[in-house]
Length: 337
Ligand SMILES: Cc1cc2nc3c(=O)[nH]c(=O)nc-3n(C[C@H](O)[C@H](O)[C@H](O)COP(=O)(O)OP(=O)(O)OC[C@H]3O[C@@H](n4cnc5c(N)ncnc54)[C@H](O)[C@@H]3O)c2cc1C
Image 1 (cartoon, rainbow, N blue to C red):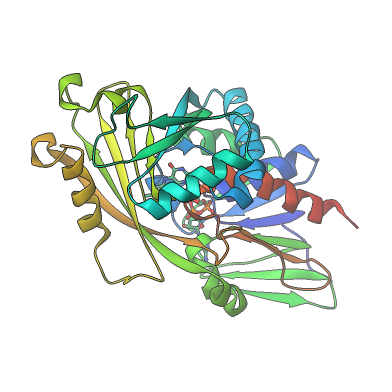
Image 2: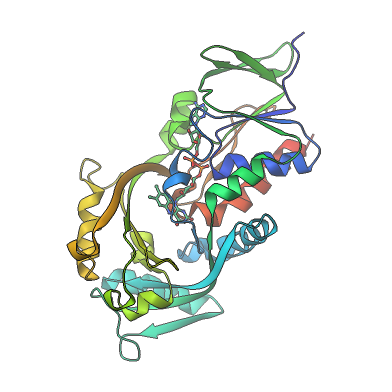
């Protein structure tokens, strides 16, 4: 008979793992989080913190609802920096058609036309999506993980898992220790494949590059950008102004494109188009991996019929918009006998 370290072990302390851990603890469970590096070290660390629904028509309604939930959670912990409208803009006719389709099928969106409000950077028009937000992710994760019922071990990389049929639980093997619990949740994002080949096949890596400017004078920025964050071509790139005059920008490469290409090149192109090239002086360039799926819906489920190993990975580039829904799904699966 093995003694369990907790009711549930959550592997990975990014936004997904932290939210799942806190939600399970809320239900009275004892949760042990194991994190290979430091909490919030993965894709979450590089995220812009911009909460906006996924503009794909098939995902918009669900992610809008989930975004609202995350905003409420963040506000309750004092991690909601500000709410803001987000401009989803297009730089190509196909991207513009996708936004037009969203406009036709969804309430509460306004079309911003080039004629009434000139857009910078060769953008041709866009949708204003109300009530986006900026979240302080570092702070949110710390607060979620401090919830009573949640314990965290950092610098504890999980190397393998083994379901123990006799005791109906899972051994979690790390370099120096082995832990045991009735249930395990993988919230490991890009590293999920190291623990499960099945998940490796279903996930696609996406490389994101993040750039942060030094504080800029308002005159150095396009007027539109001063008012709101801009998301371009369904999320291929985004620009986020901050109150302190810094601008953060992100650009992506997908697995279907040439992953060897440097996403920083795309980011530099974007910045030039917005007149933010060398003059803005960069304070940092970073490229980071995250994962997405073929249809853009996160992978949430279980690896075994008795639901001892659950997973929540592949949250993609709208991870913040999906996170609350994904955490709910894991909580439901965990609580259902
Ligand atoms: C540059 C960039 C900008 C982004 N901007 C936004 C944005 O503005 N808005 C938005 O909605 N989304 C954004 N995203 C996407 C968002 O960051 C991700 O969807 C989200 O952070 C995924 O969170 P996660 O917890 O699932 O993964 P991660 O944050 O990657 O967390 C996984 C954690 O698991 C740990 N781990 C992995 N393997 C193991 C193991 N074997 N043992 C123990 N621990 C392990 C890792 O160390 C890591 O801490 C951005 C992503 C990037 C890369």
